[in-house]
Image (cartoon, rainbow, N blue to C red; front, side):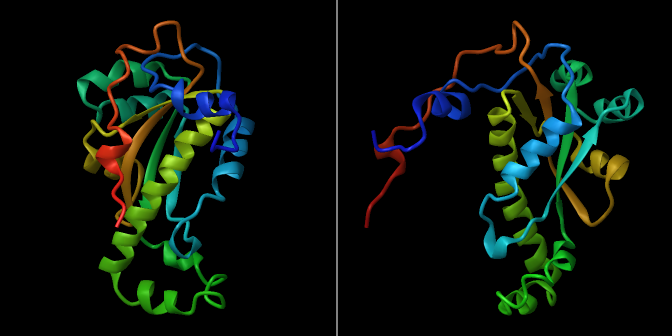
Amino acid sequence: MSLVLDPAAQDLLFREARTANSFSDEPVTEEQVQAIYDLVKFGPTAFNQTPLRITLVRSPEARERLVKHLSEGNQAKTAAAPLVAILSADNEFHEELPHLLPHFPQAKDLFFAERPVREHSALLNAALQAAYFIVGVRAAGLAAGPMTGADLAGVQKEFLDADHTPLMIVNIGKPGVDAVAFPRSPRLEFDQVITTV
């Protein structure tokens, strides 16, 4: 085997993991979310920036406000999920960077001067962090259902501010009995993706 991670962990994180469309009614605790974040915060990003922001939607009132912004096919499963997270990119993440400046002085010129550069970097690196978050949810023995089928501008107005760009909504919980609605979609093979120069 070329991988160090044992096969059971590989299956948990990738091969057997599926996007869940239904969940059991077992709650997702704050302790579980804390453990997930404490693991995935170490995922690499450019300049070690951490632009991802996570808004947990727990209350019935907040859930109702969120569901109205989702596409019809995402509404029922989101209303029933034990926990829902709005993942967004903080376009003002550079305000959290002063601790990095002694190690990366070039970051000041990149991020403090030009907002378009900062927004691009926030979007890219928050998307990286969102992927780590989904893998972290799987590492906790939970299932994730990431969705972009939503009025994201409406989600931003309802839950965020102009400095935060919503990326996706993620339903989180123990998978239900009919959690997987479709067979796994095919993936591209190695030779279709990898080019060596």
